[in-house]
Amino acid sequence: MRSISELSPSQARRVKYVLMDIDDTLTRQGKLLASSYKALWDLRAAGLVLIPVTGRPAGWCDLIARQWPVDAVVGENGALVFWEEALQGRDGLPVLKQRFHPLAVQNSDPRLKDILKEVLQIDERLRVAKDQPFRLFDIAVDFAEEEPVLPLDTAVRVAELAKSRGAHAKVSSIHVNMWMGNYDKLSMAKSFLCEQFGWDPVAGLDEVVFIGDSPNDEPMFAAFPLSCAVANIRNYTHLIKHLPAFVASRDCGDGFAEIAGHLLALRSGGGGPRREGL
Image (tube, rainbow, N blue to C red; front, side, top):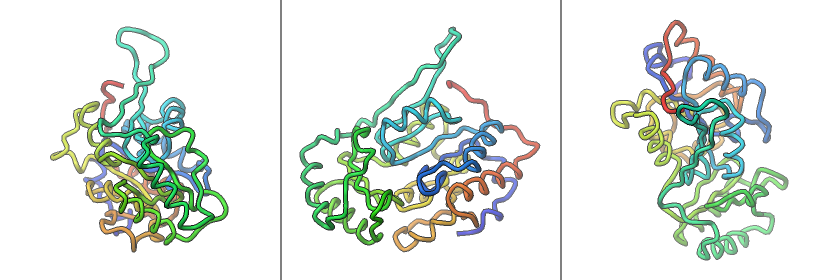
């Protein structure tokens, strides 16, 4: 990983889309920081398309799509994407649009329920995340969002057991997300960029910056040559085969603001993309 200061002006001027994780990328200890929220508004003012790509639930994504300065939000590790769109020929409030991955399986699937019973036996302190009632497709096991905070190797054991039982599982900085259905953050993000913005998944890889912090961001790190991470990625480098290209010197939301500020400084004097279809 290279310092974000090594990002070049020519690379920065090619960027049209900024995608980012939320927990411990925009937040610290569960709180959205003033620095990272301001950075979102600054990126938007520069004409960049903004899309959080998160493991958080559908219920949260509804709020984020409506209230944050973003163009869409991919949630539940790629199971869905929500965005607002103006009705053609009509003034007034935009309409919330929803798209679900065709391979997404409801989290009421009995196979997933059986896996949950098994993983909770790994450590009696493991628990279902409190945002679970707002999820449609995955089950989130909390190991570090609230007390007691459990060791990272406990989360790794949960993910390994879930995968051995046929589920997909990803470790974030706070949860282990488990789901049935062959999709991830990357597949939904790429599909949405192509369909909504006409993005070219071959020629346009360097038009995308992704910013993350943990192992569940690895598909995004591997896909985009301008992938970035906040400094707390260093807690998980032993679990990540494909590391991001660039890293901030600061952690969490302050690291996101650092990356955004550097990107915008390099782009100063250049124009951003038009928002088409939103």
